[in-house]
Length: 43
Picture 1: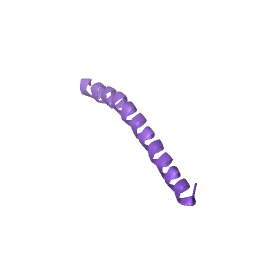
Picture 2: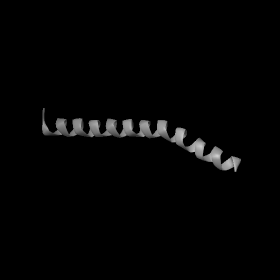
Picture 3: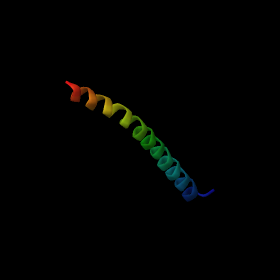
Picture 4: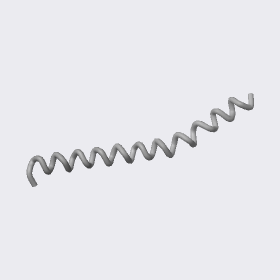
């Protein structure tokens, strides 16, 4: 594997890791936000 090949492997791993964190954030955010809005709406 050349230096360029290793570079592209690292870029790909970093990209996939960022997508995993975005997916986790997208799953967690809807669960957090509606509870706060509903609680504020009832008061």
